Length: 398
Image (cartoon, rainbow, N blue to C red; front, side, top):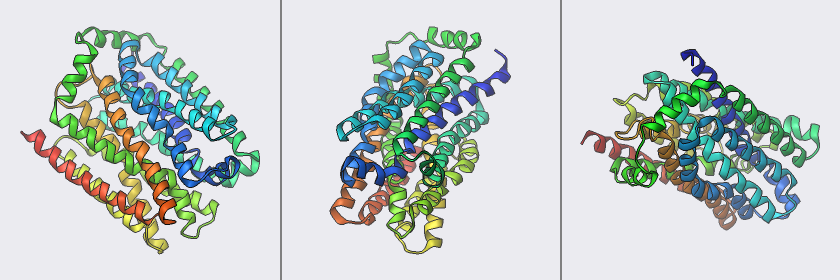
């Protein structure tokens, strides 16, 4: 395969992550419509938004193993189809239980995409170009989120007339993306290269997992991933609703909620590329600090401070996960051979936070009738992440 074709592969991965982000954020601006249609509370809606992470936790490691065994072409195509099936089922769901099950389907396709993307990038990119490539594909979910947050109430709902029809349209788009990846990844060189990497890996997967979790640095990265996902998923899912409680209309809240996503695109392209080993942990501490300040500013009534908080949140959320994954796959003993199973392990742990984030904010809102306590919890999580990054830097120097 031509070395230049790696950029075409990157585009295919980017498309898959665009679909991933579009589906992951598609329900956030539809909270009121779905709650009204299904007759459920904020706490119940929080459990729906966190349902796919439950499946994700159980599926991430098996999906990472599957990825290492059958290769990126088939595994990522399968993952993309599960993503499409999930949003299709959401659009057809008649009640709370069916909606939960529909959202849980996303937790099967999601980890394949999440683990497959860094595997493809680590295989075909090296050095600073690897960080750049990771940053590029991470703009995919950001752009998907922008489409979802800004167009839902301003264009799509008035045009389509129903949140269900909107979700069915997203399902069709996601299916087309999965097919597009299958075509892009059909070049023989991809399968040949992955076969060579699999041939060099002789350890059983169980031993690989034991070897990984025996490393203190790996365990600390996994713990930090829980905190990053708790912060990101909790705030991302409830941000439009939080902003409406500050007096914005649904359309205004949609545009304001897209600010972190727009900022995150620039952050994704710049920060991971700068996160070379010599300064990676300082960058992690700085990103966590921005997240802490952002969660405090979002509690104010000042439009200027809220804008600043959303700006900071965008910088933090765009790169925290990417830099953590980059740290993981470049730890000693992982590399290209075990990138799939290591990424699966990462997301299996991280999605514990993905479940707790939206559920915690929903429950705390129902208890206090405000998002203030939930935002203070997120501040504490961000401070703990700063401490984790500092500890990780000391472990790596030993």
